[in-house]
Image 1 (spheres, rainbow, N blue to C red):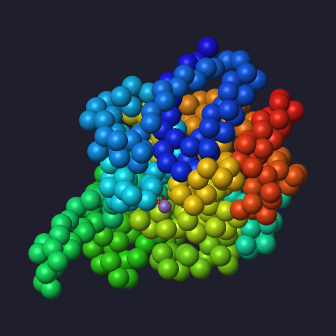
Image 2 (image 1 turned 30 degrees about the vertical axis):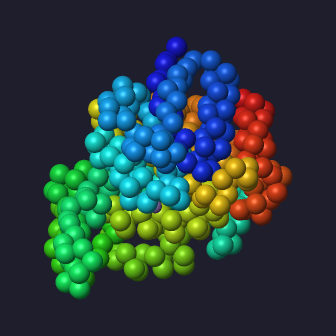
Amino acid sequence: MNKYKIALIPGDGIGVDEISEGVKVIETAMKIDGGFKAEYTHLPWSCKYYKETGKMMPDDGLKILKDHDAIYMGAVGFPGVPDHVSLWGLLLPIRFEFDEYINLRPIKLLKGIKGPLRKNSEDIDFVVVRENTEGEYAGSGGRLYKGNPSEVAIQTSIFTRKGTERVMRYAFELARKRKKDLISVTKSNALNYSMVFWDDVFEEISKEYSDVKSKHMHVDAISGHFILHPEQIDVVVASNLFGDILTDLGAAIQGSIGMAAGGNINPEKKYPSMFEPIGGSAPDLAGKGIANPIGAIWAASMMLDFLGEKKSAKLIFDAIEAVTEEGKYLTPDIGGNSTTQEVGEAIRNSMKKMA
Ligand code: IPM
Ligand code: MN
């Protein structure tokens, strides 16, 4: 029996409803498979926790997490706590301290979903590999002369050779397993240090992967490409901020941010990796029971895949698509009138049927 220690951080708002559906799906997968067991540590770290304790997680939070095989996280952020406080108090330290340098985000139009582009599901099926530990998110800078007319704010991007090479190699390896086509997202026409460096490294690494077709596109140009020719895209590698922006665009062409999933991955498994729905905590939807659980359930599938439970991961993903294809149980964001719980249940039923 394979045992996995999973840290659960449902977080704030709709994150809580979504993660609870994801956990139920994992339970169902465990019963069907019979060969693995997930053991959870429930962690209440969130904005509510912050209001009670003054911290998003305890001082030894990372130490507690380190001892797990994976982290399954909802969304973080709630009115009353500034976003940069909640996110720099929980999500970003986990990404950085656990060296989760790959943020893997599949952009896939699920069967049965029309999406704003009205494409067929096979026409939107690509992956964004986002750098996740440095770049524009490095947190380097400062503010001087606060409130004065002479006030200055500096936010410096940091691109290291190590960080740039490893994310590109990961993307090339992934492209090799897919359609062997990789686009590097740049903006070297304007960012004459960081992105020219990024392009140089990409050129170098591409020589190791001559079997993969590769090119770069500026971030503005590829934004249009996402909309006009998504069928031409296979794998995309981008810096932290560019990848962040592009994957929200990706989520939109998938039909709903509520259906987008991602993994924050430390490929060497030296530290736990973290899996999450991409969408935010949506305070206005919290407690209404109408959040789309598919992003969280898909993230659970990615987590099981990463842990090595490939069969269960695929079963969950196939069950999600069976439900979207049938179109009977959908949440309001994609034109249905089912609740979060009903969609979760439909996915579990479809897993049992397919097993
Ligand atoms: C994401 C989110 C985060 C990010 C925020 C909440 C800090 O938008 O995971 O895409 O920018 O990385
Ligand atoms: Mn984002």
